[in-house]
Image 1 (cartoon, rainbow, N blue to C red):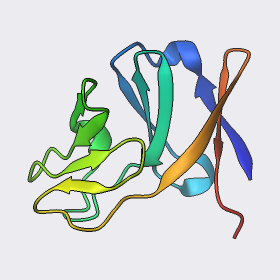
Image 2 (cartoon, helix red, strand yellow):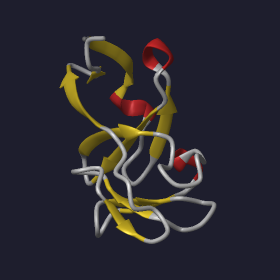
Image 3 (cartoon, one colour):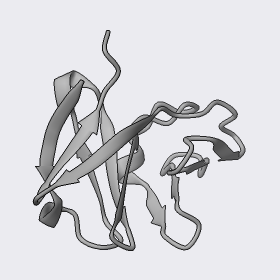
Image 4 (tube, rainbow, N blue to C red):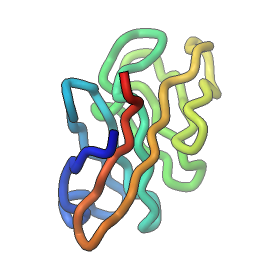
Length: 105
C-alpha cells in the first residue's frame, strides 16, 4: 500500500524524520539527496532510531540507546548489541511528495 508521508523539502540533506503512516513507525532519511525508509524502532532496545545518529558516509543509522547500527539500504543490524534487522520500505518521490510502500496486511 502506497502512503504519502510528507514533502521532500521537510527533510534536509543529512537529516531524518519520523512519520507514522497507518500507525507504522517509519524513519525517513535523506542521504545525499537519496531517500531511505526503514522501521523507526531499534530491534534491540525498542528505542526510536530517529532520535539517534545518521551516518551519511556509511548510509547507516545509530540507535541512541546502545549504539547499535543499522544499514539504511538493507535494514541489516551491523553493530552489536542488535542482531536482528529492522524493516525497510520502498520510498518514492513524486513531485515534491514522498510516498512509502507499506506491506498489505
